[in-house]
Length: 238
Image (cartoon, rainbow, N blue to C red; front, side, top):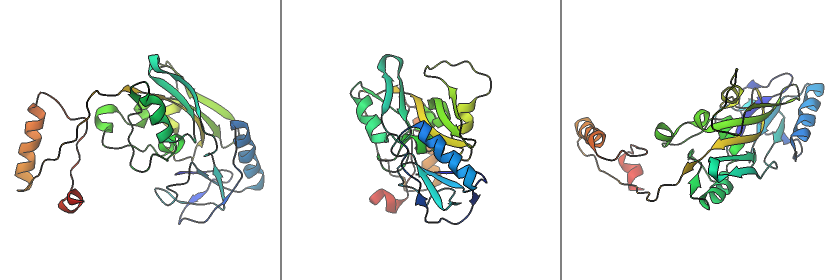
């Protein structure tokens, strides 16, 4: 997934290009070195995670691509606190497997493959239909480690649910598409897995009036759905 661009000068939004990968950094220090080299050479960098969504969102003109997909692994997981810290290249599938063992989960559920990375999900602020009930990335991300465009490592937020801070760097970097820095580590808030998870399909045949009646019935029901999606006939049939 693409996470924008960073460098000196900053990359300019435009048509997608084929970017040569600049190494595979194994640490935040190596990311710093790559960014500093790009600054010295005046070469914009395209920041990528696992590289599964490079044609989406905001493609940039950058002949070099810095991938943080090799920065992978869970750094810290405290089930009792419902918090997890992982490197940016850690896949959503790996996090799901680790947290499921403790009957917990990361309630982002973005569109795409479980092979997508946590860093790119946060950088693009991606989420699925559960966000309205369980929170968007800016609600779920507790802390970040980021390499800035000057090649410095900064941290925002923390590793606990209740943080006290002045300027909220975590919310600033979340959804910035890599234009403010390269995310190298993320701390997230988890939720307990429900004991029962059911999906129900309800047909709507008569248009808006029937849909409004259905929504009114859902509002008055004793249980509220965690998410709701409206599908057209062709998609529902598939």
